[in-house]
Image 1 (cartoon, rainbow, N blue to C red):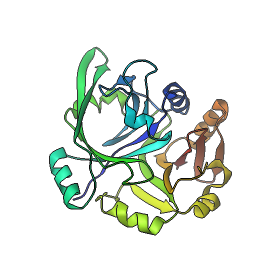
Image 2: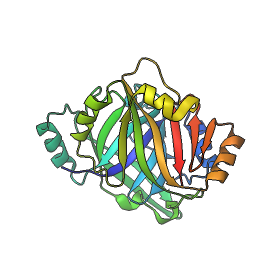
Image 3: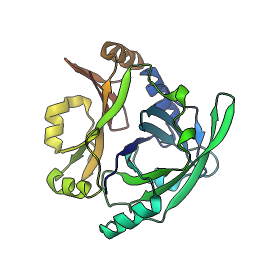
Image 4: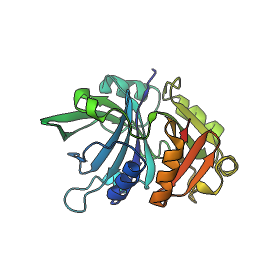
Length: 261
C-alpha cells in the first residue's frame, strides 16, 4: 500500500484564534472557520492535493476529547485513503493497532454556496506513534474542501514538502513509519535526534522535555522569504534567517515552520 500526504494538523486546544492570527499574519489564506460534528473547530490552508489544518476546541458545548488529550503543536500526520475500509484492513493485516472507523462532517460556506464536507478516518491507536496522532482520511466530498477561491497562498508558498520528527531513537522509529506506506516522492518525512535538532535549528526550535518523539518542523516550498521574515517580526514571532530559508517558531506550540526558496 502506498499513500500520499493528505494533511498535517496543528492543535491549538483553546487558542485557535491565536493560531489563526499568526498564520493569517504570515500570509496564509485561511478558509472560513469550520465546526466539526465531533466538537472541534478548524481552518485550512489549501495546496494542490493536500493542506495544513489548524484545529481547536470550543469554549462551550461539545468538546472533541482526542484533541484535548493530545499536546498542543503539530499533532497530526494524515495520509490519504481512497477507501477507508480497505485501508483499515491493510493496516490491520500489517499489525497496527487501530481504533474504530470515524465518520464526521462539517458545514461549508463558499461564496453564495453552502454544502457539507464529509469524511471517514482510519485512526491508529493512541501511542502507536509517540509523536502524535497518525491516521488516514477518505474525503467523500472533496469538492467542498478544495475550493478554487482557497487555493493559492498570499505569501507565495506553493506546497508542504516535509515534516521533521525529533526522536530519541530515530532509526528504529523510521522502520515503524515506513510500514505506513507513505509516498515520499513529494513529501519527505525525516527523523533526527534531539542533538541533531539543536545543531540544525538552534534556539529557535523548542524541544519539549519528557517525550520520546514529537512532530517538530513543517517544511514549505517557496514563499517571499523577506516578506515572511518581516511579517514574523511584526507578529513578534521568533525567527532565524538562512541564505535560502526562513524559520519561524510558534511560541508555546513546540512548532517550527521552515520556508525554503
